[in-house]
Image 1 (cartoon, rainbow, N blue to C red):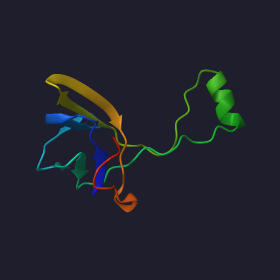
Image 2: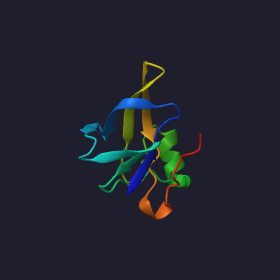
Image 3: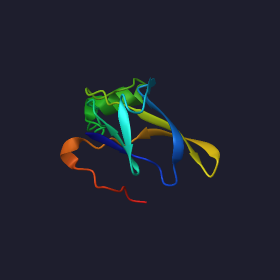
Image 4: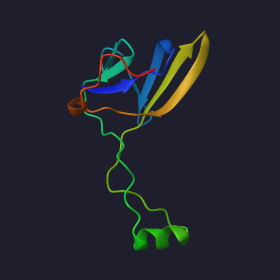
Length: 105
């Protein structure tokens, strides 16, 4: 399962979006402790591509340069101490990384 850590102090109800599309608990993800667990594959963000001379020249000219891989974006609306909070672009941990039972605080 692909995992996303809930922010410290996050309380339900949760509203989750992947790439701007709403996701439903039980259908698309489950909440396990302080983790959102997704059964469908997600593409985590990778490090930015190296900026060679060509990329640097394009950036200087004002041309945006993007990597080849498109990463998924997970956004979350949650409550903390009764106040609605938002978290965007939460890091995705792939199954092979074996997310621990509890994320770091």
